[in-house]
Image (tube, rainbow, N blue to C red):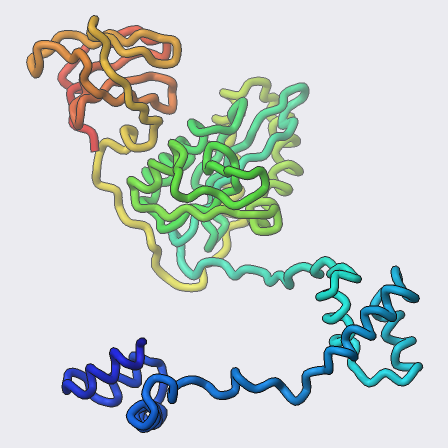
Length: 382
């Protein structure tokens, strides 16, 4: 069918022979051969005659059946290598691979598991900002306390752009790491993470991530144009895993020496002491000069790096959200918002706001209490 289309294009002078041959993925000379065969015998002349011929190397059916019967009656349970060695000693002429394939096709022996892929060390990105890693590590960073350390680092240089402790890794901590990175450096190209539930939806445990059903975090990355990449093994995240081994060996000792007892003190120590010293010691030079960061000029980054939920306003101009009732105050834009679709934003610090389209209607504390409206709260979201 493809040849007929190309042939008609050539005969109508819409295509040259070179262009028609390119469409078919063949050379000009092969296309001319097709033309001669087609004009002589029609479409049947284009069929490959080899598919109608049996290979001269094909074993007779009787030989295959005899081999299967022999194995089934006398050698059932033998591995293929053992059976083939006996088969050759008795005068058999077929190769080990031929014997194995025939026995496997007859389901007399099972296929062995693969030996696994040959893994290669992945080279670093050539310039800063091409790929950013983010990961968390649960560890006893101070005596009697298990915290999660969240690190956001550059693949090209291993420089840590963000580093802080939280009680539990999740969407808010991931947003915070990205926000600190973008504010310090700008937008980056790609984001490399594990398959944590706050990063990805995974329909089958241990399986492939669903890139068509983004999480709250994935929705924000799509909005910013950042490509997310999922890692499928700890070895794939080797750069960040090695960094965490270093942190686990050093940080507890430094925090203990500094007499730190609370998370607030620990985060201050990370920001002002540990992080600059770590980057000075472990940051490497990128392969190429320059960077791939793009300045983020919109001032409403916090409206992107937050959770978004759609709600319908009730008859009392309230929105139900997470067992709280958010009252929308009267404003100059509408008489009321009954049955209107609105969007609830929940920020990193737990505070909330209600948006109608691009307009912020009200802001609330983490407990759902209305924060007094000011002109600053009526900003337009990105």
